Length: 553
Image 1: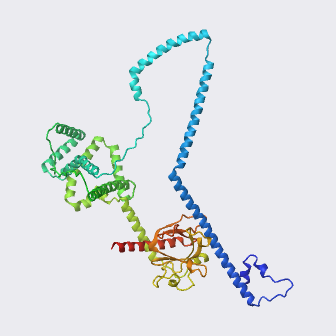
Image 2: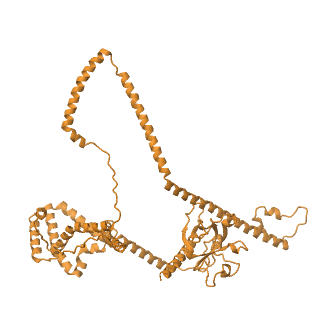
Image 3: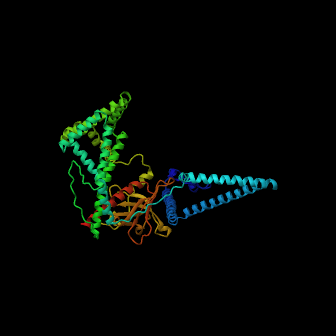
């Protein structure tokens, strides 16, 4: 008791006996000593409550500052006053610079005129010479402009015009027309790819045999490039004849004419919606395939899988050394022969024998084994989950309080009500009990910004979470009306408030569906803020999803 009394400033002077009176013995323990000890404990608890209230007020001030900054930012974004002020400053600076330049030019001209004024006789002679020189120079300039003026104008630099393309509004008719245009534009490319695949698959044996013989003969004699150029000229010649009205159709694969649907003038709302869904699905699949190809190429060159990129690395070194030590004719012959054999023979065998292709087709194996970015994320998340499972299986949870927790954290985590049973305090049913995580509650303070009275603005207490409710118990004795019980279903928004570097015990808050509550309720001065937030948020998601599924059923 003597040690506890000495910790309070000014308490030793109050408890010291007077100089003239009798000195009581230290071993005597009377009723005055017990009263003194209870007074010290009450003094300590009041000081602790005062510190909590001061901490709550500081967090209120920080929260008010944060909210005012958000409102100021929104007002600035709506009015664009800052942008107008900046433009006004730039225009003012530009006007001042132009005025200064005009003054400098006028001053320089006046100085030149005063310095270049000759005598009268000399001025007349000079005027005649100047007229003759000006006449000759004007004729020379006129002749030069007539000859080369057009070319000089072509090389004149002009500022680039930034034209903004106007976007057309969404229209079902326009969407259908664009789809058909895209299909017609891609038809030559798709036909060319079909013909190439038909040659490789030996769809027509005679055509593929003739093409293989011609190609290998051209590569052997070094005529591969002239062959491709001749095919391009032949294609353009056939297109010219088709444009002139000739009916020429040459294709290995017979073309199948698709039925053309007549355009509908008026579409219903359901037909328009279905059309948009079809286009969105096709665009989604097309963009997905393009993204897979680009991501695989990127991962191939970024050493995401070193065993695959190593093969490419070795192949590039081999090609580099071959190009350095062998003549280009020999290298081109080898590449051309390999490409012809691969395209006409090896691919045909691999397509007809899938198991053989899966074992020995190296490019196919490399391309199939290359991962995309979503696959990499799935692999990393699976690896992390396996690592967490192994660590959790090796570790155990102690039954006692961790040694690293201080007295304040211990009090903040393990604070239980002493006023009675839980369901009696909050007027709930007996099956509503706190969750296992918050069985003893979290010590915190409630910042109710909707209240105007200082006594109701901030309340110290304990927060509990049950399966369906969020319960706050006020720490003041005899204040059961100050307790709060909120249904988790009535919560519309729950979020954390930004962490402050000065106060790590940053609050979190939520909004309620009730019309009487205008401002969000905020819980601050909580040691285990993140744990409480995760528990409340997970239980909120669970309850709202269950209510939504029940409403749908």
